[in-house]
Every structure is written in C-alpha cells, then in structure tokens.
Figure 1 (cartoon, rainbow over the protein chains, first blue to last red):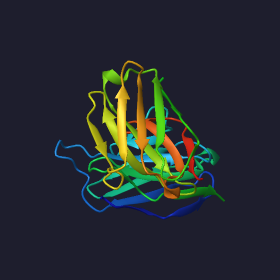
Figure 2 (figure 1 turned 120 degrees about the horizontal axis):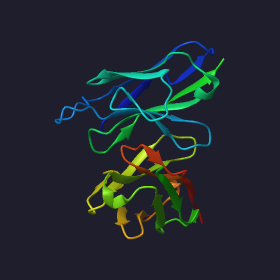
Figure 3 (figure 1 turned 120 degrees about the vertical axis):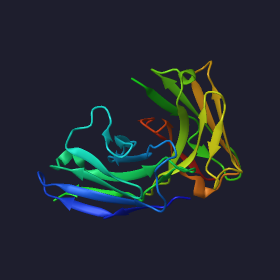
Figure 4 (figure 1 turned 60 degrees about the vertical axis):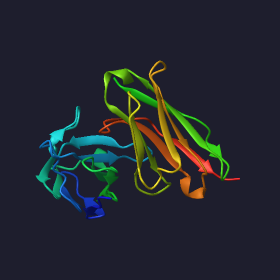
Amino acid sequence: DIVMTQTPLSLSVTPGQPASISCKSSQSLLQSDGRTYFYWYLQKAGQSPQLLIYEVSSRFSGVPDRFSGSGSGTDFTLRISRVEAEDVGVYYCMQGTHIPLTFGPGTRVDIK
Amino acid sequence: QVQLQESGPGLVKPSETLSLTCAVSGYSISSGYYWGWIRQPPGKGLEWIGYIYHSGTTYYNPSLMSRVTISVDTSKNQFSLRLTSVTAADTAVYYCARLPPDYWGRGTLVTVSS
C-alpha cells in the first residue's frame, strides 16, 4: 500500500496568518494517463470530510481561494493564505492513483 | 446537488454480518462515477473499504477483501456494503461517497458488541 505521511501532525495558527501542510507519498502519484490523483480534505468536528483540492491544485466548488495546493510526484503541499476560525479541523491528504486508495494520518489545525 | 445517505443497524454482534445501504439523490448512479465506502474508527483516521461502478465492477481494500462485498442497485439508485465476521475492530463511522470522493454521506456509527 502507498503510505502517505503528513507534517506537521498538529498546527496552531493565529487568525489572518498563513499555514501550510506537507504530504509525502511512498511512491509517485503520477498516473500513466498523465494525471496525478491527489486530494486534500478537511474534516470539521462531527462532520464528514469535505473535499478542498482535487488533482493536486484544483479547488473544489465553493472552496475559498485562500486554499491552494501544489506539488508533484511524491511531494505535495496545502497552503492557507490567511487562516480563519472556520478552517479549524483535521486536514487529510489522499491518493487515488494506486489501489488501495490511502489517506494520510491527518493534521489537526486549531486557532491560537 | 448530489446527496448520499447511509442506513443500517447501529449495533452488530461479533461474528455477524454488517450491512449498510447508501441511497443517492441528485445524481443517477447509472450516469457514471465510482461509488464507495470509507470507515473511520472513533478518534482515528480514514480507511478505504472499496468501491463499485454502475456496471458492477468492484475494487476492494486487500486488507478487507475476504470479508467485503459491495453491490449496486441502479433501479433504486443505491449501493450496499456487506462486511462479514465482524469484530470490535470493525467499530467505526461508515461513510458512503462518490469518488474521487467529492460528495460524502453524513456517516453512520456501527458498533460491534454483544
């Protein structure tokens, strides 16, 4: 199975400040079709995960533009340009290139 | 708007079979996409169980493959999960979702206990 590693595992951020989360995969996520099936999710307390970013850098419908994704191959980053109180929760990365699909362990983000 | 709703027993006895159904609205399963199940033990991370295409093609997590069956009923626009021989380790919130996944159900807690 592809192992997804996230750093840091927890993050405390001052509102209005930027934040970034790194995710590394144990193998390249570049598929033979030229696409990279890598995603970022946010799970708020008591809710199901919500898709933020798909295929590395595309924002899902309704996701604020303060969220951005980048990376390639095995190294990926989620950036929040200015953290807001509603961004609190656990962020997961996920790869969909290899079977079985696998998630990272999650990064807990809270507000200082 | 695509909506998914899980249903099924919230309590299952050890060694018995867990059965859940996911009803989909706002999108026809027959129109495409894969449809899957993911679970999350209390306080822990997310684990893929498997997914299915409307044609019936399935992919299962190898760690669960011997115990899992996912099926689809396009006439009812729903798909189902069966997990046999459950133990306490199968206690989790079970989510259904449309792949990649983009739309998720709210999740249902299934507890395995006698």
